[in-house]
Length: 79
Image (cartoon, rainbow, N blue to C red):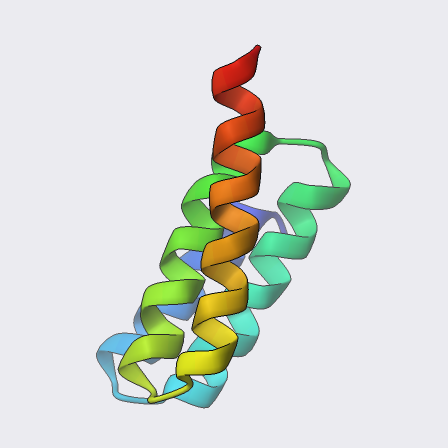
């Protein structure tokens, strides 16, 4: 399944309040976009993952994802 489809599954889980499954789906989407070297979709997936981690109360993990997001966003801006 591609990153966009996986991310869609994550949204469905999130809307149902099933944060563990949503987080897993978003992590899979991040990995899919990373493997495909699709940086724009990777940024969106990281942002979504970070927000969902915050909603689930996983602040430390969310901070790590935000750091990765900011690093990638800065690298893209520098191009």
